Image (cartoon, rainbow, N blue to C red):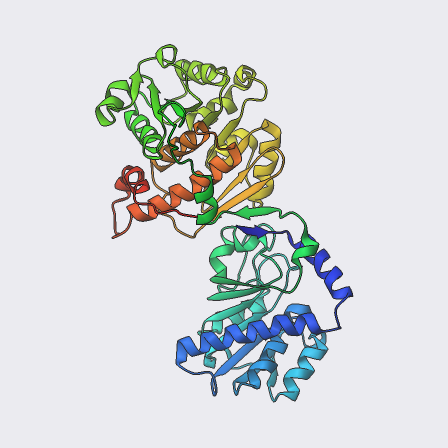
Length: 481
């Protein structure tokens, strides 16, 4: 599991470690790691390291110092190094001295000429974790002139380290070397797309960091939580999930939501609604009825996809919330809860609820997301005493206690009509099987994205087919601890 901390907590941990470490030792360790990664990138791109040319874009402070020390280490390997100083009066003195002793060249930004365009690799040491906002014009102009791959020190300059927002010009790196711990920008869109491959270097911070602010599941985490049939299990003990979705106007939503639940290996799926005949034709094993009163007992309900917002849909949501079992509210159910606050009164106190809005639905429910997705989702989870899953390139999942998961891959295959219905069905199956709501939502996001990638293999695939193909692709997943 990847663990992520905010920059304020990382800086506090750094202060503790620095206080007991020889002056400069931590920076040299970090810079050496940057030089090793730079050498590897040079070799992969050009076939050799010695004789190649690296340009350092050096700002004020420690990030600039990391870049300068990395340049000094590269000089010892026979690499030509030119440091471009954007703030010469504030350049890290020890790092600058080390580079000069090693034979590195130093130029001012206004005198740089064609140097950035002549590099085999550029190292971005413009700004560090304390910076906010886009690059200043002089720095942006330098980055624009660079044609070689960029290796970022800790973060691509110009991105917000805590929110992942990119509000102005920013570096787009081929790779990023970060120190001590992952920061939010490494897992939050759009900043994550500017990072390239992220390489974490241990500098001894973990014992001082405490519990992470955010977590990212890996395949092993998902595998250990997926329910597996035991010898004594039957269709009831493996989880019975109810689907109250779709209808005569949107029967496809009923089919897609049900598909997600069936193919995530729910023990039994019950469908209740006016699309019962369509669902039964696609999935004969589903117990499909026309009304909630005939559906029978379930361990979790999924409601909302394709439901509409008329009075009948409102009563469906009310009845599901009053059932006393965990509920996944998606799409129109979210819109109904936003438009009719009295619906919240139907919820049994303490009953788990998972809300799965996209950004526009979230705005109706809890206000605009803004640049800080984690803060917005965490606040909504506390406000509604629910697990909230905000869909997007970075899917953010939070519970009322402030625990947060992020799912980011940089892939966009799930961003198509109907795929969210499948996600709701997956969550429902996991929740009915007894997985805790936060983990049910986080594991479902991982499964959904991975299945969408399988469904799109051999692309181009018509976007209209991706949602339909995702459930079947769940069968193709190989997840093992």
